[in-house]
Image 1 (cartoon, rainbow, N blue to C red):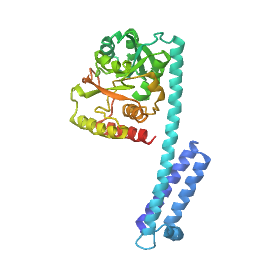
Image 2: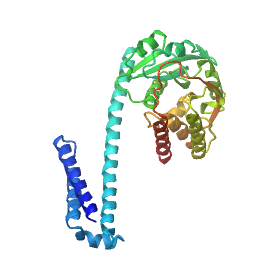
Image 3: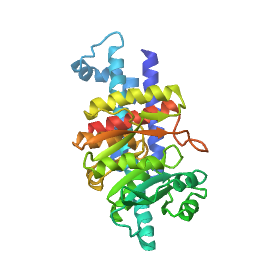
Image 4: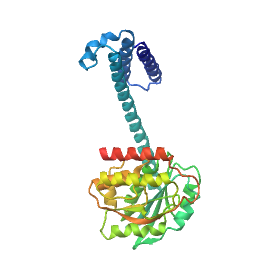
Length: 346
């Protein structure tokens, strides 16, 4: 029991130091400071005179004896700490969104000032790129000039690149949007799709900038849309072919495919593939929030809103050069899982 009381006192001191430091930096609102102060006093009182909370804890089922009331105090304090942490995460996410939206607005204004592409009824190909100057010549060099009678309009979103990504893409004839702040592939794709809408594109295609997707297979994605057979067409390495990079990733693809098929009520075999085509009307109705792990979010949101989604076989190759921008396997799986859960809860 003495150890638990000491632990409670240490937690109270730690929270007090945290509140003082944050308040000196003016990072806490008055109400938040007051709430933390009350919490610190309550914990300190519990450490010194724990019996003072006996009536309340008894009403919650924590009877006296065998340290049960001390355990009850720790349970309640942990719940309160979780609430404070959760509130902090929400504030950080909100601030991140506000800064990101401002950066996107400035990027759109820069492109608007330089002149929007004037190709109406095109097939806009959105390519999110972060330091992919070495791979873009291969990707853009293989890009067809026309797909099913539509002029192909490559749009490269440089997501905070520090190499020659922008100049390389521009010299190869792509429309380039520069964003100074790196937010992630999902945010870059959203921004690129906004550009595609403003150019009057008839079809929007998304693909990676690392050379894993074959531009010559683009017609497989576009044809079902133009035929009115689907609203979104997803490329699938499982139905096609791919070069195995990791057995763990292969098992992960199958696991997440089953999960997304269940949640989206539409069978999918390759949920993490970013090579897809969709109509502008479909994109405008989607509620996309994920800055990084957007692939699962897009497919799940579309299928749950009743859009027709199908898969077509494609080839996925190893990265042409450089190092992957994706996180380690466990980190990627965790981020992918959170994106699915958040989308499904929405």
